Amino acid sequence: DAMVIQNPRYQVTQFGKPVTLSCSQTLNHNVMYWYQQKSSQAPKLLFHYYDKDFNNEADTPDNFQSRRPNTSFCFLDIRSPGLGDAAMYLCATSRDWNEQFFGPGTRLTVL
Amino acid sequence: AQSVTQPDIHITVSEGASLELRCNYSYGATPYLFWYVQSPGQGLQLLLKYFSGDTLVQGIKGFEAEFKRSQSSFNLRKPSVHWSDAAEYFCSVGPSSSASKIIFGSGTRLSIRP
Image (cartoon, rainbow over all chains, first blue to last red; front, side, top):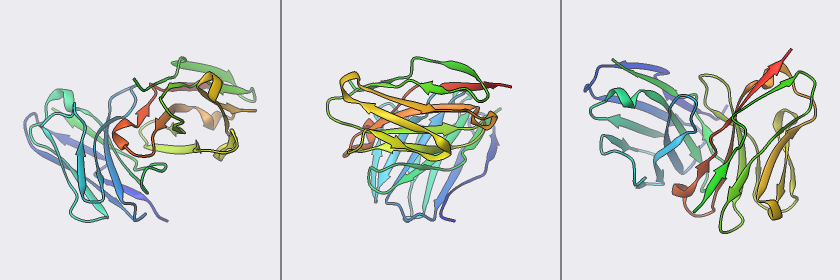
C-alpha cells in the first residue's frame, strides 16, 4: 500500500543533542510537510518542500532544519533540542495543494 | 486574516446518537476544506474534503459535511456514532496556491458514552 512512513516512532534525546527524524513516502507526491504537534493542540506547520523548493514558515525557529535528498525522503533536523521541543512531529505529503496524507508521527522526548 | 474556529473543545455523545461537529472559517476566497481525524498517538487521517461542486460531501466511516458559504461553515455530521469514533477531529482550510496558509482548527475531542 502507498503510504507515509516515519522513523523512529519514538525518539528520546538529551537537551542540546542533535536529533534527526526521518520521513519517506511511496505516494510519489511532490509536496512534503513537517508539522509540530504539542499535546491537545493543532498541528503547526514548520516548513514544506514543493518539489525541491524549500519553504520555511516565518515563525519556525532556526533550530529546526530540513533536507529532502530526493522525492521520497525528507528529514527534520533539530540542532539543539530544548525541553520545549518535546512534541509529536508529523510528516505529510500531497500532490500539489490537494489533501495531505499523514504519517503516524514521531514522538520526541527531550531529557 | 484567515482563521478556522472549532468552537467545541470536547463533546460527549452516546453510542448510536447523532453527531455534529462545528467548523467556521474566515477566508477571502472559496477555500479548500478538509476534516481530519486523529486517534491517540497517531497521525491524521482524511475523512472528507470539499473543493467545489456539491456542497454536501460524503466521506469515509459514514461521515458527511456540508459547506455553507453564507455561514462560512463546514460542519461534520454522522447519523449514528460508534465507540470507535472517539478521537480528535480537526477542520482544516487551505488555498490552492500556498501551503503556508493551510490552517488547522484547534480540534474537537469526541468521547463516546457507552
